Image (cartoon, rainbow, N blue to C red):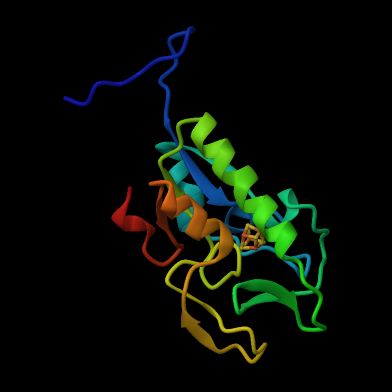
Amino acid sequence: MEKLEHDDKGAVLKEKLLVSACLIGVRVRYDGGDSRTESILRLEDRYDLIPLCPEVLGGLPVPRPPAEILLGKAVTEEGRDVTVNFEAGARITLDYCLENGIRKAILKSKSPSCGTGMIYDGSFTRTLTPGDGFTAELLRRHGIEVYSENNFMECV
Ligand code: SF4
């Protein structure tokens, strides 16, 4: 039988799971909207969902110009280099995971921060190319399992 951990008051401690904030309905997308996904919200029964938005943590506002990754840099369609914000957000997210024992993440697909496997190619034509977003890549490099809203059932 599975051994459950409890807090000081006897409540069962649930495993922490990092989730892209937009996936649980927080309006942090570049366009001021969210990507709420009900099937992820239902995981709350079994997991302590930790919503973070790397781009906001990196100092970018909501709304903000969309950015894509081109030649290793995060750039807006107007050519503004926002790599420093993307890198800061990724680092803050990683530090939070390491400090709080988070080993798994469900991150929004295709995003230049959160995307895993396939991301937009920097042409702003909705064209996908193999690759990871800044945060997904950094988390993976430090041993954190990264899933998306399309394949998270593999991890739960
Ligand atoms: Fe969602 Fe990640 Fe983009 Fe923030 S950076 S809006 S969490 S996909």
